Image (cartoon, rainbow, N blue to C red; front, side, top):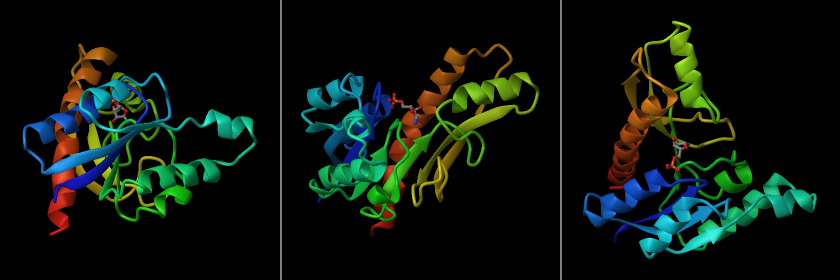
Length: 200
Ligand code: GRF
C-alpha cells in the first residue's frame, strides 16, 4: 500500500511539486492524500489541483478574529488532516508554528523542511540570515535539513537528513535561494524514503 502523505504548505509549493514528481516517476511508492494551505492564494494549491490531489484551506484569521486560541486552530487542523489517515505529515513551507494540539495527534510522523543546518538559523528568514552571517565573515556554508517535529520548538527536533550548501562571494539572496531550493527538492524526497524505510 502506498504511504499516505498529507502536505501542509503556505506558498509556492515547489517542495510539494518535488514530492508529486517523485511519486509520478515512481521514485517513492506514496500518495499525497491531502494538501492543506493556510493561504488561499498559495500556488501550491494549484499544483495539488493539477495533480488531482484533494486540497483544504484552513486560515488562522477567523480564529484570531473570533478570539479563539491557536490550540483551537491547531486542533481543527488536526481533525482535517487525521480524516485522511496520513502515514506522514510533511510541513513543506508551512508558516505557522504547530502546537501540541496538532503534534500530539501525529507522534513522530510530522516532518519539517527548513533551509538551514541543524540549530543554525531558526525562523522564517533562514536564508537571508545565513547570507548576512556569510557577509560578516562568520560562516562559509549554510544548508538544508529535514527534522521530525516532536515539540513546539521552532525548526528543531530530531534531524532526519541535512546537507550543506556552500555560499559564494558573488551570491545574492536569489542565487543562494535557488541553490538551496534545488537541495531541498532532493532532500525532502530522501527524508520521506528514510521514514518509509523505518516503517519496515
Ligand atoms: C522552503 O524554503 C522551505 O524550506 C521553507 O519554506 C520554503 C517553501 O518553499 N520552510 P516552497 O513553498 O516549497 O516552494
